[in-house]
Image (cartoon, one colour):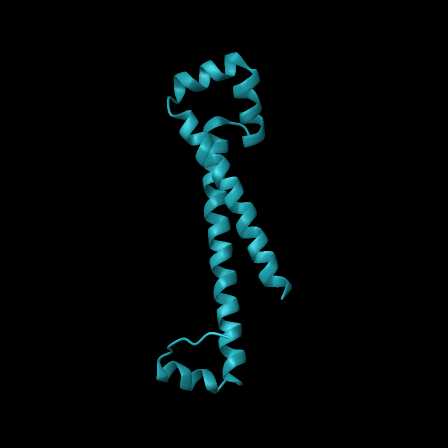
Length: 109
């Protein structure tokens, strides 16, 4: 268990809701759930931007830039920084996966 500094006025109010350890644990759990959900939504929003920009999902995009020369030429013409987009797109997909796994672990406890 860790110790944290909490303002006395907040601590006194929290004590009115029950056992202070339980109240603080529940509050911290709720806070972490909310932050995980925010991170997931932010990453998903960025993924949707790329899907709209390139009109495909990331797996289709990755496959087509490797196997469809016409698609690749079109992408390179319209979006000279497409490789940077692809790296961030892939990163955001991994970010959703990692934050979702973290959220699931929290929810199982």
